Image 1 (spheres, rainbow, N blue to C red):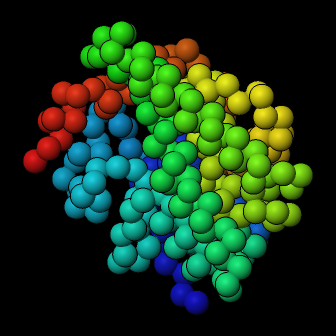
Image 2: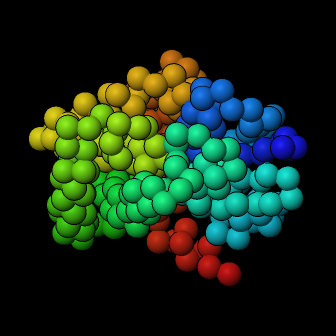
Length: 248
């Protein structure tokens, strides 16, 4: 198989970490993915709206992956693409893949949007009055906790989401769940989920994947400066004015 350089436009966010972790897990498995060029997008500067990026991703979101002449958008689609191109234990390629893929899609359709909205209303919606945020915060928090309970039931006594094997389902879910403190979603009621978070974090590929765009000493605990910058960036991106301005 001809090895073509992969280009990844990303940023240190849950969706960005999915793909960087995936690449590092493939490398950890001994798979030659060739040269990978990382392009970190500064969301606060609005680099996701630059013409050259929008030409690759009309949705102006990270991550975006270019493999040869093909541009692929949406983090979970990228996970599946890489898993199918570079076969490994991360995704079965027979009928058993349907034991894994529904949980990848579940993350995209449920965990990402709910955790993301809880985070936005909790941390970033500065242009919305506190009283107006109260109900959405409660609603998204309760649904987030319900989703964590679903994850707990799915894990059961297994080490990974889909049983004894670490898969792209774990990769899709972990970056969102690991940020529970920042999102103020209390997952401590579910010790199996907490233990799963620790198991995923202990993997060398995950360690390296979390380091894309972040200094090594801030992987687990961001500096106050980075927290402030992220909060400011999040407030700008989540604002209604920003959404209105992005409509073309």
